[in-house]
Image 1 (spheres, one colour):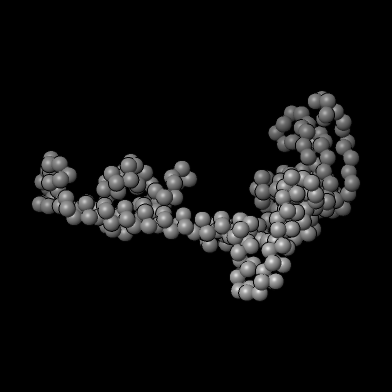
Image 2 (cartoon, rainbow, N blue to C red):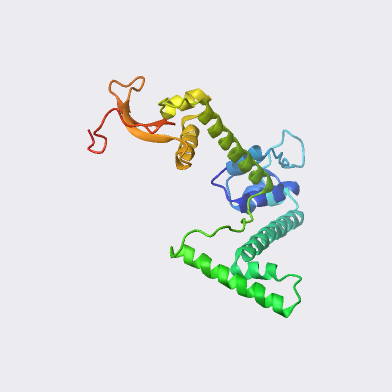
Amino acid sequence: MSKTSDATIDHLIKCAEMDMCQGEIADLLCISNSTVHRIAKKLGITLARKVRNGNDNEVYPEARESEFDNVERAEHIEEAKFATEATGAVRAAREAEIRFKRSSEGRLKAKLVGVTSKHQRYEITYGHCILEFERLQYKLKNRGPLPSREPRQSTMHKGALEEAQKRKAHGIAQGKRLFDMLGYDQRVTVSDAAAMLGDSIPRTASYLKKLVLAEKIHRVRDLVVIEGQPKKQWRWVFSKSDIEAFHSGFEDGQ
């Protein structure tokens, strides 16, 4: 599903709404029947079945043109093309509008909305130009970060954005929970912390990394015993206290 473009998915949905069957959709979108079936199954879409004339036990060797009304089918295809093109145009327009709002010109235009005083418009424009200059200097690494910045408008779908926010909140909560569970002198690896949380190792590694970046915990490379391994392995060891490695030689590859 991840390898299929959003435009193809939009086209397929529009075709399904017009009661087009799997074969017709595959021909129109130039994709395989199996791809149409996979996308429809993933989205929970029930596609229309191909309608045949005659008894069920008859064999129909005739070509597609003899099975369907060509004029009606052509109208369905044109409607699907128009609908999908309109959907793509709406999406492109929305993304273009967001890009403009993020641009320097777009931000200035938003600030000047409703301002009629010539003097106020001049002051707003002057301040905007100064701010844009400082932002440019920051990008060129000629100054430190600005005191504050405007939040960017997300182009994500509302449902996807809400899900991302939930994952972020969950990650913050898990990091706080892990920090509270650690004793001051306790030394743990990522695997140890994951077992304490009951979470996956990759996610726990992310929680620990954020705690390190926030300077709430310390980490050091050390040799530790790994279950199932005949020799000790180099791993990151984390602790609330300023710890030192029990073993040296990691930098030398020993």
